Amino acid sequence: MVDDKGVVHYGDRIPAQETQKERSIINREGVEVGRLDAQRSPAQIAEQARRDQEQLRLQQHDNFLMTTYTSAKDIEELRDARLGQLNGQHLAAEQYVQNLKQPLDRITGSGNELQAVQRTPRRPQNARRSCRRTSCGH
Picture 1: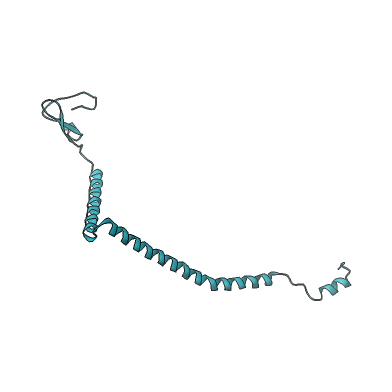
Picture 2: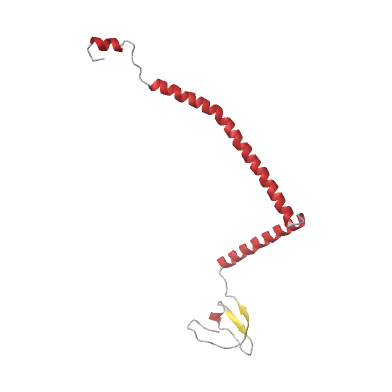
């Protein structure tokens, strides 16, 4: 075993302070034959459990797919068919929105024209006559 200072120690027992660290198992000839991982913190243990659970879920899903479909080609064909259905629904929804916008555009478009007419200042009909009388130059 190599301690924190880099000193190599040999023996048949591990010192108590070193039991929580990673260590190698060597045979009588000094050849490494195994490895023991360091003691893990509760957070590391929880993370490993989460990874193991996710791996199990993926394996179960893979097994389900393999029992349900005869080949990867079947899965791909089903995927493509479902994508085609979703694309069709998307196009239908876009067309529906366009159909709803057309009457709205007609309504708001005529409203804008009406507002523009109301905003233009009107010149009184007799403004020209009064301007001549006052010699404003028109």
